[in-house]
Image (cartoon, rainbow, N blue to C red):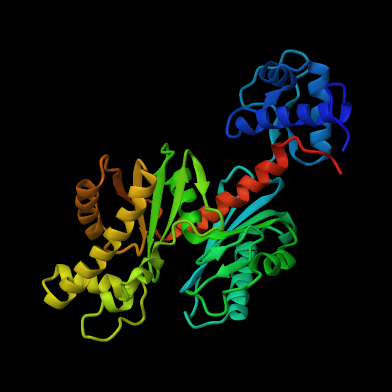
Amino acid sequence: MGQLTGRDPSLLRRINSTVVLRALRSEVGRAPLTLSDLAGATGLSRPTVEGVVEGLLDAGLVAEAGEEPGEVRRGRPARRFRFRAEAGHALGVEIGVHRVGTVLSDLTGRRAGTVVRGIGESDGADERLKQTHEAVAELLRRTGVPHTSLRAVGVGTPGIVEADGTVRLGTALPGWTGLPLGERLRSFFRCPVLVDNDANAAVLAESWQGAATGSEDVVMVLAGLSPGAGSMIGGRLHRGHGGAAGEIGALHLLGREATPEHLLSTNGEPLHPLDEAAVAEVFARARGGDERAARAMERFVHRLVHDVAALVLALDPELVVVGGWAAGLDDVLEPLRRELARCCLRPPRVALSQLGGAAVATGALRLALDQVESDLFSVGDED
């Protein structure tokens, strides 16, 4: 690769284009900008801005807007321009144990629609992917968005996920371990597909639009079949060396053999199915005075609290967000606060997820939007 210099015209064009496009995107929802406005906002000359805008018009990323309502015309009206948020779309997908969730947005993250489908926990990989494709097709059909408009897809799913989207270990879903999920999905979508662990997606979502907005050091705990956690450290997602950071569900391997199904049992038999409705019923019975349910809830909360405390001691976050089973999780907060106060020199704040069941799909959408923004606004080498 040749050395890039300040005199490289292609580099300068890319830099100028990025600067102008960023300025237009930052004004989405406000009045369209004139060439003079853009020159003032970017520090570029007006002729340079005009040339860049023409290129962005040709690329379909910018549109010329009409006159503003009530504008008084004095001579020839100034041309005004806006970022075309509708020039493409980002898609977030959750592929979980009991459901497939999808959410679609334009290039600014504004939601266009969602579709959620239930799925059997025993369904294999092919059936799960078929349901995913059908849910996406339904969403695109409902919103009137063509398949070709997708610029990036983010996916959140249980398991340890490698950088290329291969699930290295996924015990929660049948046939998931070793599945080249990213490769399978890329052949379907024909655009960049980013696959990550569901808890990682959830902490991105809470940092973007939920309980962790404005916090840079966050642990997000998903209480589920195998509890997992996603972590933001210094405002950056921490995946670990092999993508396995936050797998607190594996702590039972240290000598604690009781699984969530047994912890939540009220009759000596494993709780089945282990889903939100079943857990919510146990919690509701406990609050209603059922002694067996109360003991089951206490066992579950005690295990979760100790698992979270171990992670907090290692990472020292400012905030712990608890999500996963949306119903009944308020019973976890006070025991967790007490345990963290007991064992931590500086206990973090503890809050419930604000996004609930939408957290994973929302975080997957954030992954897709990050890819879109990288494609639009980074100054990379041309092919």
